[in-house]
Length: 256
Image 1 (tube, one colour):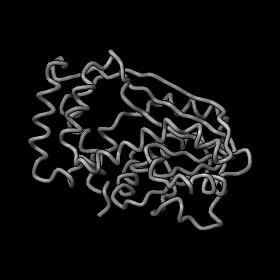
Image 2 (image 1 turned 180 degrees about the vertical axis):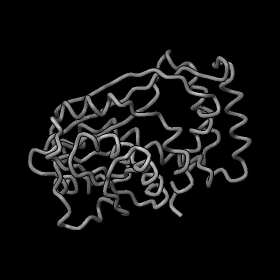
Image 3 (image 1 turned 90 degrees about the horizontal axis):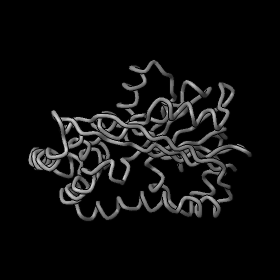
Image 4 (image 1 turned 180 degrees about the horizontal axis):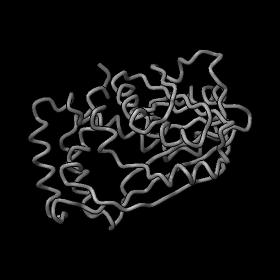
């Protein structure tokens, strides 16, 4: 079982959402049309692949975790979208796969070896094609006053070794420009969208289960204790069991 297998049933429901208007804004920036092909790497439950499917022609999504692909199939059925799902790593795609007009990747960038990144994207993208690095996260400012104690609790309930490793994701995104320049890509556009929604306290607590260092598999019989602890920490920030969350969705676009 992969490290994300036990997170699959929680991921789509509890992670920060990408709003519908985000996909439209990115598609407009890319001038995406039904004549274009798109590959989503590390698709998980298919959030990006399904979101971009109405704007692109042929959409392929790849992920090494069978449980995530099963969640993606269910999400595709609910959304009425068609996406070709492939089990595996992008690095293992055959030489004749693609090239694609657009390659998207969300919270999986740091799982790709830095040295392999450049040759991989050059192989998968057509000349002039777009690499789109997406993320959706809680705004780290006074609009989310609950976030700091929440993250402290998340760290406390996480496997220490896995928590340290998970920090690579944020560092990789911060180093994105340098990484892409090194790989022969040039930064082209940034699409940034802020949205505000209400999220239930118990849903925020369950969001912790979507991270591999604090997944159900990592926590074992401590899941209920973690949920109770985090809900108690969040209670002072809630009103009628709900917390206001400001979410920042961002796409960094680089051109080959």
